[in-house]
Length: 136
Image (cartoon, rainbow, N blue to C red):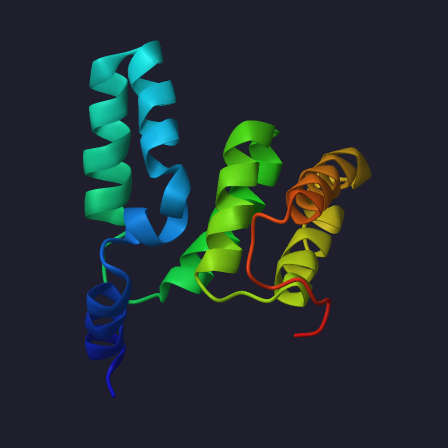
């Protein structure tokens, strides 16, 4: 199966990338953004998720692991937690998420990565993901 056909099959199975990432949190996340600014919410929803995330070439799990690393670099804990949850929902194991975060250490430093692991720990303790094991 080509990458493009696999991406298309993934979208059919999970619906939109936004729905796959946000899951039951979608309404809450969009409402939070809309409360900040309705236009901002529209840009995030329509461009970031419904355009960029729907591009072929990378599977959703890979996109989410990259997003996690980028959000660690920005020091954005709220958004990081959303995308940690999204990576797990997209099929990343806890071990894969941990490895993606650890890869950030030589580039971003320990303080950012320690903060990222705090977000992951809080997420796992809250039971808001489907992969509770540490195995890959």
